[in-house]
Image 1 (cartoon, rainbow, N blue to C red):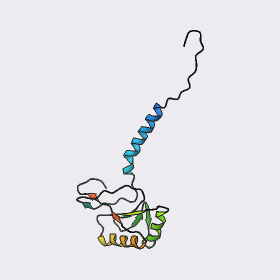
Image 2: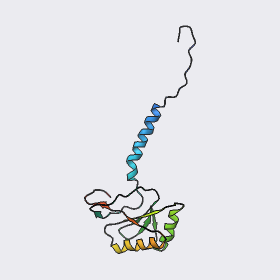
Image 3: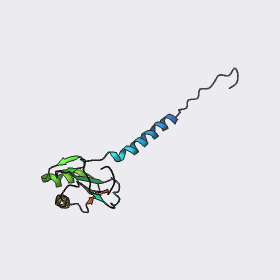
Length: 138
């Protein structure tokens, strides 16, 4: 810019603050994602070496609480309508996987009955969720 010349306006957008905010939000969601789980609080049984739980895509979470109540994801379901509700929860998922979270105080008979109901609804290969022995939290 020389003396006596008119200055040109530069219209540029500074995206640095936008990137900073987006990165902070990304970190917050990455930290909070494992805390946002579906279903009721269940005291999981301890195992010495649980297998990897895998990702949550296409996974239908069936929880059995301490009283023996059935839950699909975060919805309580009556035992009489369990198969219908399970098929409705699948929706258009091409490869659904059913995973059971059962309370540690349950008799295994109740978990087995849920597994049979899942099999009768047309699903194969039910997974079980457990926590590592000595691990804190649920």
